[in-house]
Length: 412
Image (cartoon, rainbow, N blue to C red; front, side, top):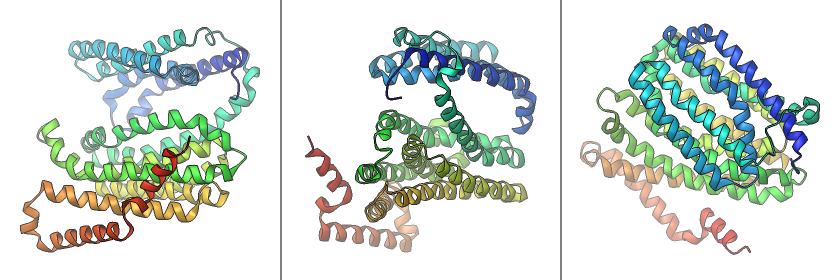
């Protein structure tokens, strides 16, 4: 929205509660079907309790977005911490008393409900009253387009997980979940923080690709230089750290962190560029990308069902992450929103830097490899020698990330 109108916000508030009621009813009565899909019949009661979360989620999303739009980031951060802390304290008590999966839902639900109340207070009566849906017809149409593409994204994100659960067992999904806690989840938190700031800015170049080309290219290259080497550190370090945090019995989860760290980094890049595409209203791009990736998930589910197991799921997960972002980049290059040569050179350099970082940390933490695998150690040393030689020839100041930082540092 270019401007905020109380009547328009009232219409959206009504719409959010309609969505919430529909979601809550469908989840409550569909709980047995969801539990069967995930091969977890004992989860019916927990799923039904989650219908409360579905009831308030759309309204909470609306008012929290309005709080950020009003620039109240500090107040929003404080109330988010407070509501989640209170939710965790009550949730901890519920887990101790109930000792089942239902108790695990209390923290999330209470934190969400408190967050909604706090955000309504921060909005200073700009929202809270109900209004006719006709007052936000354009916004609702836009919302339905996003809802459709998000449903496709849900299928893409969960098809392999559901198939792994059904064909390899819930215990395998538990290993996957523990690995995600230390890999993709932290990247998602970083991603959400970045997008909340960037999203309102993307819309300013909707009708001017030339204005976006340099800035968007620099943004993506800079993000790649930040997240890919960090993913390499996580990939090398976390297999050793996870058993210390969770104890014995998580050998599979430790191995998964090596792959999921890069999945988290790639998802961050995809989400940043996806937010830009979404703000442009390029739903044809989003639907075509989603269709290709959804078709790939069908292949993945088939392979897993035929006995491919967790290893196949990881292979398809990394392929999906790469292909989704590649399609986005190609679409934006063709549309004039990204510069082809700088993005290719920047990404290539970031990938090479990530490879060097992974080798360095992997070898430092496993010195026995130098003696037990001399060929591997020789290849690693060669990679580092080549990297140092490149830096010597081109110097650090000519590297893409240094050029980008220098360019924007000098801007007023």
